[in-house]
Length: 395
Ligand code: ZDP
Image 1: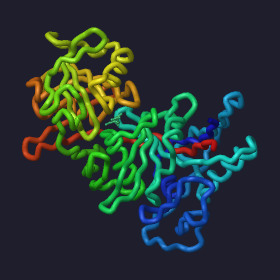
Image 2: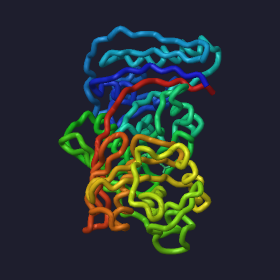
Image 3: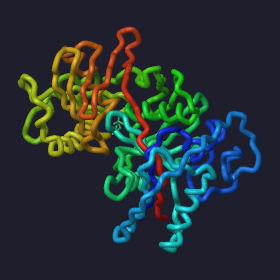
Image 4: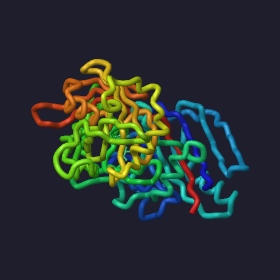
């Protein structure tokens, strides 16, 4: 695959108007070249003729900063990178220029896709605006290429933001192209993304449909994002795990690589196996775990028919847990929101923690509360836009 990117660290959401349509009511395809049928009707779009969009946001004029071209013809990669805080492209033509240049260079037809990259505690996602269609704009293979940290943009997953009857919908590909039901860090990023499309910093909430049902995501005044992650699922066949035929799997022995770990299995819409160490052990130092070795053995263990995300946890205090994660379809990541929720459920079930905990992940802390009132789990943490760009995918 050959890929080009124009990437820029940005300070304002102006690119969202240019790249992704003028507002949430009026979004055009993120794929270039744009088809006339998908052309935005807003004046901010280069393909528009008249405005039908009463919610159009204003374009802020920005100064073009010098760009640096870095090319590596040997790999077929061409990157135009900007170290500026903003890239001026008020006409929105940059995307077309890039795709023309590349088509000219290679003589093949190429698709480009605009993306914005977000991260939550170092769990990073390529966000694709899919608001104008219910068909995903990229294939699983595209997602694998984009997630590649050497040959692509680099990310733990690709998230598509779609419309839904209620509000919005998100879908996600892991970096291996598999599609999980739910993504805790990702949904915080989705809320930030939607607020930036709306150009608002006011506290507000969105209802987002996921493979695990509707989640309510709340943007708080302090910039943190709080998600009602719903109730955990503990019934073994629903996790799914074959460690029991019915009922909960709490502190069950599981043999992996010749060692017997005790595990508690929890679904947060997606499956998790939580372990506090080997059977009979008094805890461990998770920093020295051979994660790359044992992670895949848990992930592909025969007792987990849908594979599994695994959290390795150390109890620092009853309200402070430390974890490392091996994610299904993504490997070792800096953070896993659904994983942190599963960890608190498992810790409470095993009598190791309170219902309100700070969960320390390699990428930073998440606040997790398993409410006694509604049995729901509330996760609070950050989400941040990192950069935007245009990637070109062959084929
Ligand atoms: O269930 C899975 O296959 C996970 N790899 C999905 C991603 C989970 C995520 N890291 C999270 O924060 O919940 C995004």
